[in-house]
Amino acid sequence: MADTPSVFSVLPRHLAIIMDGNGRWAQARGLARSEGHKAGAETVRTIVAECCRLSISYLTLYAFSTENWSRPKTEVSALFALLVEFLRRELPLLQEKHICLRTIGAVEALPLAQRSALAHAVRATEGNRAMVLNLALNYGGRQEILRAVRNMIHDGLAETSVTEEVLAGYLYTAGQPDPDCIIRTSGEQRLSNYLLYQSAYSELIFSPVFWPDFGVSELHRALQEYAGRTRRFGKC
Image 1 (cartoon, rainbow, N blue to C red):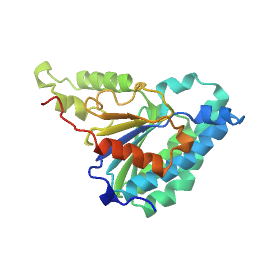
Image 2: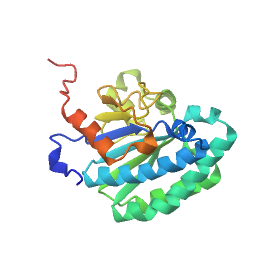
Image 3: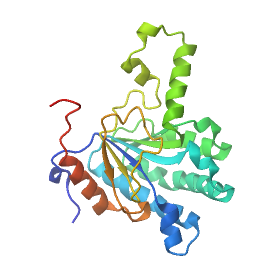
């Protein structure tokens, strides 16, 4: 039986996940890397539904980084095709669960079909209030900070008016709380340019499990680990 929200003494208000290991999962099974991404999309559906059930308010998924453009063109094309299919297939679930879809990243650089599918899904779900699902697409943490600085300069902000709160308002995640917890799957232990400003006090949890195998039980293990942490925010 799945755990109920009351099982967890503390849950993150904002959970962010680096969904890593799709390609290695597929290669270990003698499959094309694209098959790993397809399996990973099924995991996305499972984890999104469970986070919503647990009443996690914000879920941010690292779907495509600015560095991912360097992958083979066939893999990038397969990822983009999968994104359109995922949005088409999962929009009814987002509506059913009252999940609001948003994007973070330079999505204007994505191909037209992907931009159109994203825009449609974002518009269709903008009134939903149960949970915010952020898809990080063509996203990089350093690029996000650079964009924020350039926009502040463009807006003519005086040096003395630039505070942490003002800078946060220029980030893609403006108006959202910083992630309380960041999970990375596949055993790698780094942020890989993910939410660099927002993660200053995030609890980091690294799972050895490849993303396609990261099911509800693995999510619960990570959340139990998070619940056992003491967050001091630099204080005694």
